[in-house]
Length: 358
Image 1 (cartoon, rainbow, N blue to C red):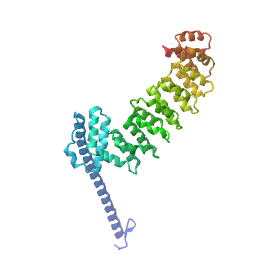
Image 2 (cartoon, one colour):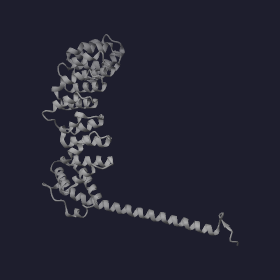
Image 3 (cartoon, rainbow, N blue to C red):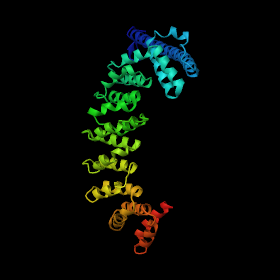
Image 4 (cartoon, helix red, strand yellow):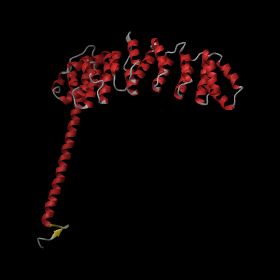
């Protein structure tokens, strides 16, 4: 056999070295995968031991009548930054499902372990998600000392930080936390408005003054949020200010104004809604009719009959018919008499209105 004899197109000596390199690479890959699996299992075991230890901390704190010192078993882990971060997040998540003394005790433990210092330090992170997480922790655990730093973030250019800062302030201070609305530069999304509203349990005595200022804001979303606040807490003293908003240039402000007026209606509300009606957009008319279904009185009967007879929109006609039924004890009789003079489509609309009435 000659030395230049080949195997699979390669000289035998080259084939040998190629095979050796390939086997070595496969062995190296095997070692890397094995190391990865060992580390993954080790991390899982470590996380499990952490969870068990933290569960004891939470149980003891939540079941005690007064805050207790954290178990000494924690001491071996408190110098581990990863453990402290995991512990802080676990306490915050547990606090969400607790109330009263149990929740208060967790807040005490959080401060005893100086986890609030860790969270405050993370407010300076270059990573937006870390800053947002720190705000969540500080606001959930009621660390009022962090308020100035959170206030500085309410107009942050990164959405995740800005939104968490706004919500965090309201969690910390309730209605007073909304002070950032005074000079808010960015719009507040509908979802953010819902979160802020849900975080406010009650209003202080001077709330109407602040809400009135927000009604006059140049930021349209602040105006809409103020209208939602008025509706939620039924600030009747701002009724006349809300009436002015149904003539606003923004259709969104008009729509929310109508919804709010439905919640705080007074004797002149329906007449004011109708006064704007003729020159308003179709969207306004549709919403106005829905509002009038619930707030119209006998004085609005002629207007409602006119809309029922003359409007081409079947939904508006149906709303007008429902409003006629609700605006007076005579509503049913009026529609029954009207029905005799109408064509079949109109009779069908009246029947639909009556079905929902009974």
